[in-house]
Image 1 (tube, rainbow, N blue to C red):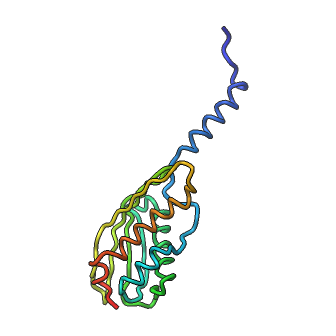
Image 2 (image 1 turned 45 degrees about the vertical axis):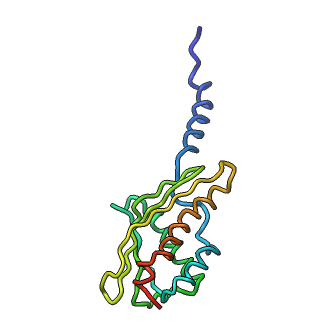
Length: 165
């Protein structure tokens, strides 16, 4: 029995590497953040005043793209509801705690901090997770995990009390 030569194995190795790379999980949806009807309603019902969105980061800057996507999602949802004001004295900042999104499910957790008049009025960690079918629009579903997390912020009574209208 002879050994296969490297040139003959090369295409097989390339395909195997490509398949393995396709299994890697990303925590940043490919689609940009969009206003969701659900969060529009939640934001309007929250009875909050317009807020600014400050810095969002991840521990040791390990997942800057994911933190940026969370910030963009929050900004987009607030803007869509007419509640984003960069000049507001109330500022929402955040720290991404975890982000793990795959082809059939995922979760995102973040610590949200609201300051008003220079003092912290809200500081809480929230977590969102979801599963979906393998044939779903994966980038859309991944984005909805971030939107679901923002929706939890809007419905949190402590957040509502922190920035009342």
